[in-house]
Length: 464
Image (cartoon, rainbow, N blue to C red; front, side, top):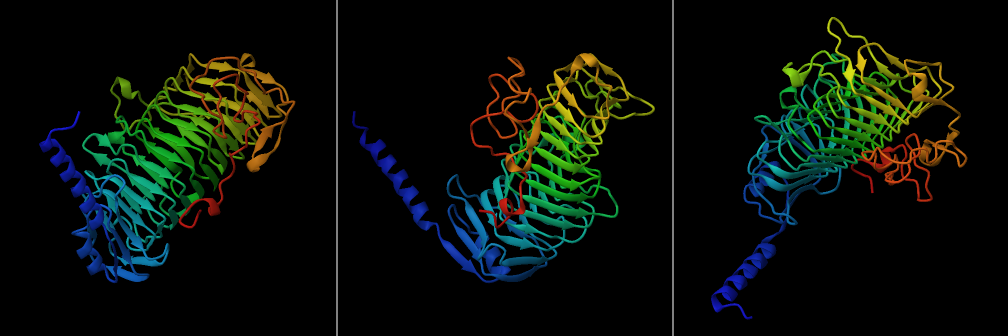
């Protein structure tokens, strides 16, 4: 049936308006920060503002409050990736109602704490930038929803403040943040305070759902606070990252609940530490760390009214199908005084523990625990790991593709789990584990192997 004339005219008008909008999108080359700000004030969906290569010095923030559109972002770009340095006192400040904005290709050497994705913004992307900012404060603050931080370099921080600090507004953490393919390296501070590579959340926001994803990043040489990453919100996923050469720093689930940590490689770090409830840690390789996994000894129970800043007792956490290789201690709960609530209903299952020190060392209450199917070989001793929870057999691991150890063809790890553990859906390569499962991090398969130690060439501004 043919639409009425009025409806046809309305549709035609909308199509024409869309064509005008697309036609109006333009690429403009600017040669000063003042000119850039002037053009930013009137930018429209699809516009690209390109700043000529050179060094520019700020004495005020560059304000972005315009909105692009899905598929038609407003792009603010350096003429060439790495060709524009922004020095001085300030960087970009994106404020409400800014949305669908891309900031790309810059080298930021202005003061720390001066580049912000503020609350009320949405779909802001920082891509292929380099951050080397002096002074205290975060390199980049993210408070808006649906931001994307990808292929950046966060380098050589020597003062307090996180490289990326994630916050929110009111009681809500920034949601659906995607941090991927970045190179974080060389964080060294003398104070040791608030010096994480990523601080994801705040104590006051820790029970709010973020649903963020941190994946395919390289983290190297963190010597700041003992928290390399400090998770302080709920429902986040950390997967397929490489953490290396940070012997005094941990990946820490400090606050919040229901996070997933899988497919990561942690080598020569202080391992993973966790507090809070319902976390799932699977299919990771912990190699040559001070501790592989440090299960927190609770100092309070948030669900019963303890302050949000407490060391919340871990309840109902699953640590399964990981490979622990040559760690000083593979699995540990440290002592706590004067209050030690320990952990409740922890599942430690089908992990592989080989070489290094003691298998498990539990120095606190550990009630209703489940130990099952863990393969233990050539360790200093089982420690707190009970006989019924382990199998003493050579797992037949060998160096394999991607620079990580893998089970050989005749390994006893293959197909040992018939069913269950549906939350363990992929292995360290991202391959399916929905059928029979192999113990440890790696599922033997004819499919190509993809897990590997990430290199600087694969992440950061110049990666392909």
